[in-house]
Length: 103
Image (cartoon, rainbow, N blue to C red; front, side, top):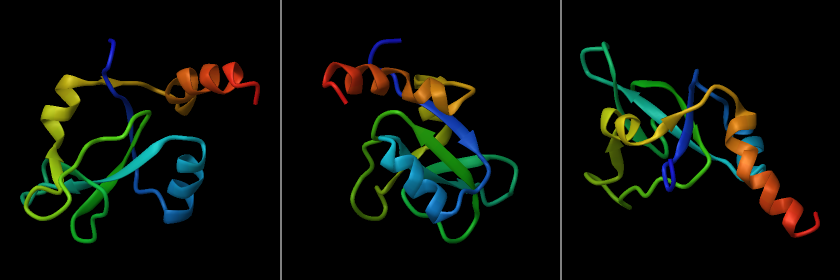
């Protein structure tokens, strides 16, 4: 599981909710629904149309900086990384690093 990103898929989170999670050292991304409405199509920093949910991760996802490369395919990401059940699972290693620094 080394170097794999841990993630949770949740319902749509407000900007305030995402900001609180990011203050804890996590990363939040919007999920775009496919055009036919059957699947999650992509992970993007901000989605306005066809937003279906939020992905929260323990590490930054490297996205391109402009269209058409400013997203990654949802299924590819999910197959290559590890889904967890709780926010605490995402914070696990972050707590250890904070404790090592004496905070």
